[in-house]
Image 1 (cartoon, helix red, strand yellow):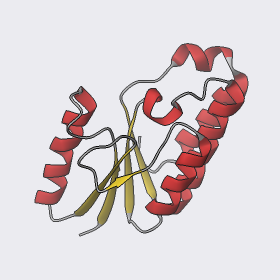
Image 2 (image 1 turned 90 degrees about the vertical axis):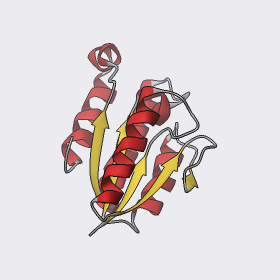
Image 3 (image 1 turned 180 degrees about the vertical axis):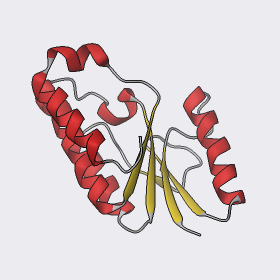
Length: 137
């Protein structure tokens, strides 16, 4: 089977995405896949990468290059963190393009900030390119 990097908030965090990720991890392993978890916060994950800015997503891309597939449990807070300016957020979207080139990329979009995209042309264009670069959304 394949090697998968699962990017997500993870246990012991108690939220819906972390719970969903634990269920998906169990299912993927039962199917015979080798799965490692990366989380932005201290957790039971195999790796911890401080996301929330382009540099963090680029570090994730470097790590993901060793895997067949990367699955990102997409939540704005996890990926953008304190990147609030349109330029900084567009940089995070651009870094997702690099991640898509490093490994087959699947985004599980749990939440998207439509209002931000509707008023920020630079971020809207960057988001569209990043989402189109994914193998599966």
